[in-house]
Image 1 (cartoon, helix red, strand yellow):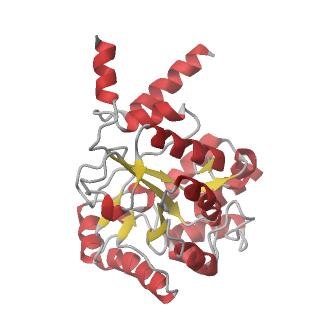
Image 2 (cartoon, rainbow, N blue to C red; image 1 turned 90 degrees about the vertical axis):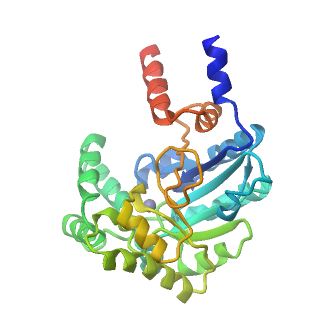
Length: 308
Ligand SMILES: [Zn+2]
């Protein structure tokens, strides 16, 4: 009886609107993990499996302006953060499913072809055989700093070449690649702040506005068509951040809280799906009527560990 009730609460509903987020994709998990931080990358075949699973459950991909469209039942929006060059490799998969996605880009990384700081930290600490726990503590410490402080820290600790990407797995798109990518009808480009600034770390309204508008100006300067949508770096937002985003003309703001979309356009939750858990289970948990997505993943992992 309890199980039947639980299944009812987990059944996909017509009014479901789910948003997924990813960062980096590639052919091989092992080679991705050499240069991109843990939890950042998924294999292309897993992305295809995820889209396939949502389609099989009756969901269809939409763009942000369709989130509230009552004529489209069971919607899901695919988003990618940061602007990794390898996102271009997802295009054939999107095309084969007639699916679409929004890519939220940080202009500075694209403009100066700089690697993303979390990948730099990961690769440098891995080279020094540091544990993942130590890396996590250091990464969390850096998240309390401004983007300039983080860059200075990396350059001081790892040398002047530290911000250079190593190859296609950790590079941001070049301006040319982003221009080409943005012309694909399956793609919309959104704002991820110019410096990948964790906006809640900024003190003044002026700094907040600059981070958002500087990225808009960068995209305009490169003649890249973009939508008024922002993904908050690290998912963090606050009332002043939302006020600045709205004042800058954004229509949608995306967090990383594992919540279904329920109509608030400036704190839209997103789900992270990984191949650490069964894909179909995660897809069903996203649509559940209760907010225990992260808890269910932890419980699953604990059960699995206890069985080993
Ligand atoms: Zn990001």
